[in-house]
Length: 251
Image (cartoon, rainbow, N blue to C red):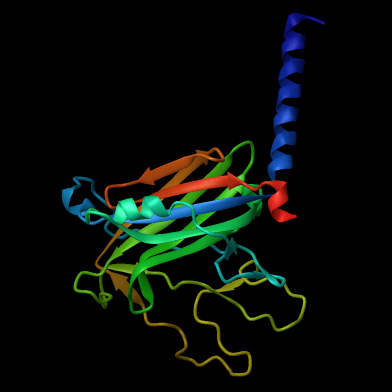
């Protein structure tokens, strides 16, 4: 066998091993803890320009923290460990924590992973200061995809007839037949779910809501378990840690 043939064979074996490793990671339970915070003066001090009319959209495949998978929650809540980080961020007034949760999740390859709906901060009508979704998946590494936006409502109420159009938070369709797929993993209704015993009213769709300004955080990040990762822009940021779950914890 020539040296070139040996190198090619070695490369093929390495790629096969990497693929097997990725397959082994898929279906593994991890513990995730995420903090989303805003800089209280971030936009005023920033010279960055932002899209005046960004296109905001929730994904078709999603789960939230109320989504049931059989009798269990798809995202199982656990105790937070980064409380010292939230305390440090809230101290002094330069930052404000909008979202802080910890949960267990079985991570899959990206094509099989639903997005997780995120909301936090002050509410303005049906909307929140922080909205959007994140997606966690696994291959050779852990991967995080963010599609979050920070809403500015100016005078404290959603802007009517102008500004940035905000999408309605999706809700799961009510299963009409026993044995249907869990909520959030099938076709979604982008408006409020009607009662299964009542017809849908013609005016059931929510009124359009607008923000005077929106700041986006859309990013792809490769991560390692056990490390605290940081993503940000001048307006807001994320602290996230993904931890392996010891087999004894789930016995």
